[in-house]
Image (cartoon, rainbow, N blue to C red; front, side):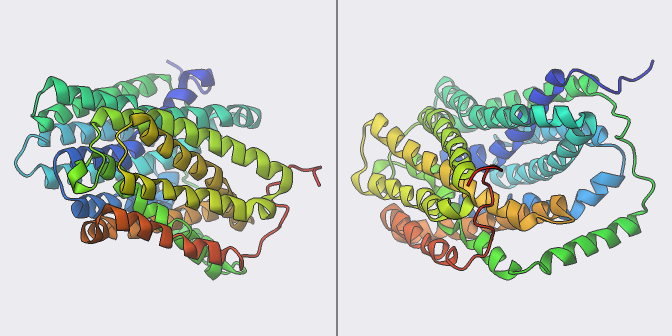
Length: 428
């Protein structure tokens, strides 16, 4: 039977990018909430879950291997199967006595599989679609990736919260059942894409280049990146711009879940699912869309300071929440919505700057390197954030987060870039 080289993109683009987004949410967000509910200390949660950023940090190092071994289609379906197996592994080991060590190991497998899936899926997108369809579906793929963020932080967390109530006080079993459901979802993705993904003519093993040649080309690409003008300052900016945010994001959910006498807000798992996964993600998305619109009209330079302020100053909402400890869920939700909207709006400037410094002959590879440093900038501060919080308490921790935003405000004054970058052509 002849294999179809093309298929209706609507059959596989939405599900492929929904499947790409979910594992990242499981690793970075759901794991934090789960461990907090299982009474793991904030120090351990922040340290070990921050280490899970590492696959995305070093992803550019093994992308050439994905490029030359087998096909992108092969890597996609294989990684989805492994993600399903890793989620099942988390579910199986959660009721065990040493569940923290076992589940962290499976989250590592999940993280590496997800990062590899990202490489293959983005490559397959370019091979499986014509240039016109690539342009048409770019918004669709981004939308379904956002839907994955929404589902992972919203309905799926709410599901876990409901399972906690069904299972009574046995939180471990409740989360175990939830992860079995997540695993079943990914096995369904695996089976769907196994049969639905097309076999593009261009998606073949790259036998024209040896592994040695690929490594040589990679070293060349790597070296040209570090020879860019002003690259040292640019990398410092990438690493410190989210210094405060990297610490806040690790402790936000534990803060909302912690008992009020421990300085938290005493919310339920389902409350977190609603606040972050529904209201928060919607605000984040609207902020990002608005950020893109305004930059296209005035350029990156015009909006840079405003966007840096928008990304960092709303963190003050957590200072407010920590000191006042409001009980009204709408006040808490509104505070998170303000912070998430500002983050979405301000993050536009950061991503556009990454695109700007990636411009040139190897822009795809250089952009991957930039995102690797971006992940490193989230990983390192996040690792120590739990220890800092437990040393000084939530009130002073969020004040510390605000202090950590200062380097970002300082360094933007020294960055050199095209002031009109990002502006729609024809605008002035």
